[in-house]
Image 1 (spheres, rainbow, N blue to C red):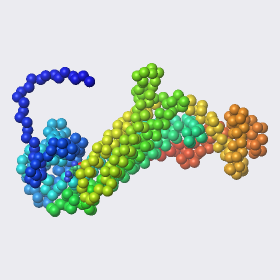
Image 2: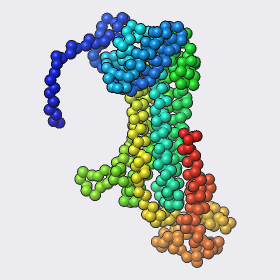
Image 3: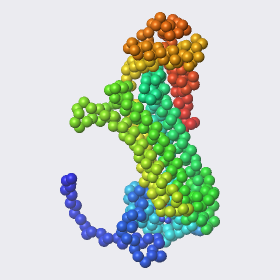
Image 4: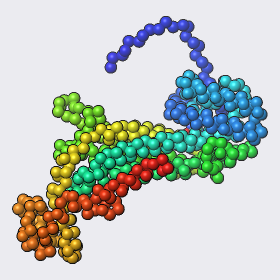
Amino acid sequence: MKRRPRTRRPRKTPPAPEPAPAKPWAGRFTQAAHPAAERFTASLAFDRRLWPYDVTGSVAWAEALGRAGLLSASERDAIVTGLAAVREELASGTFPFRPELEDIHMNVERRLQELVGEVGGKLHTGRSRNDQIVLDERLYLKDILGRLRDGLRRVQEALVARAAETLEAPLPGYTHLQRAQPIVLAHHLLAYVFMLQRDRERLRDCGARADVLPLGAGALAGTAFPIDREALAKDLGFAAASPNSLDAVSDRDYVVEFLAAGAICGMHLSRLAADLTLWATAEFGFVEFSDAFATGSSIMPQKKNPDVAELIRGKSGRLYGNLQAVLTTMKGLPLAYNSDMQEDKEPWFDSVDTLEAILAVLPPMLASLTFRTDRMRRVAGENFATATDLADYLVRKGLPFRRAHEVVGRVVRLALDEGKGLEDLGLAELRRFSPLFDGDVKDAITVEASLRARAVTGGTAPAAVRRALAQARVLLGPERS
Ligand code: ARG
């Protein structure tokens, strides 16, 4: 790779190297950290995304310390004002991040001390980074759950919009990837709407279980100061305060649960993407991707590849892997806090980012698909797709289903031998197999009749799908968010 020539800027006298800031634990130590150890333990590169929650938690903690009489009103005000300035720096990108200070917690605290002086050293009273990180993580979780659930809803809305257009569009339905029975396209699309609904609910449920304040658990045994944890919980918007300090600082089940919900959701999205990828083949020819959501080939001029869909399918791999990574990290860890737990963040954040990226690209991609409903319709009745309807016809005439299945099986055998479709067989031919066949049989085995027959709740009859569509719209309504 060629280096870009550096643009030379006139330089003033270089600033004197700043002395490395002392660690909070310097008192106990006689040796500085080895640079390799310092780099290895630092988490700032990834936990810096937690800054908004770290600052919010610190403000609430300062208020709680004030209420408990550990800070005077003026001390509390100095700290709260200082934290507002820190927040401002972080928000505007002027915050001086220092990796030597390991993580976001110590970066924020040290900056506060620089801004407000000695009193800043009172903020960490009765608090540990062990309860602080769990607080940050739980606040972050609540935040992203809302965003991801909105994103999922937008995918559902895009699917519902396409379903509304295709309520009467026949499509071959498959089992074992073999033509099975006709369905309507809307039915297929709505299947994903209901799957994603459960994903949305899983995220909501995971948020409800995580809605517990860990702050006040201290390092592991609970803080030694008279903090009103219930008031603090309320202050920070949590439903309750954690009832056990060891549990509070040592479990990461909320991360695992999120990753599990994310993996399941990724599985659903991969199936949707895989369906579309398959449907876009010349062999299926059921859909065409818009150029805006496809790429070409660097060698084959004719190619149009569904990369976006393929990558959605592929990203399920990392969503599963991230779940496995955190589960494995947590396995067998002794109570309470262990540094191993710092490894929860990168897989977690990666899953958040991956899901957000998928949810951003999927709705416009779905909206821009061209469904080849003419081709779907043409093939929906092929390959004996209505053979079950022929058997059902005999059942309606009184034949036990097992007998009817056998009769129609023989009819299909004959048709296969003669290279015909069911619809090509005359009544006389059919009657050789059963005297129950009558003049109304033709109408019973059309694609439309097959669809119409399946009018049960949850079936593919256009009338039933219309009801399912209405149900889906209720799920997306404001009162169900
Ligand atoms: N960076 C740590 C983590 O992610 C925060 C807690 C650190 N506590 C400690 N005692 N080293 O878990």
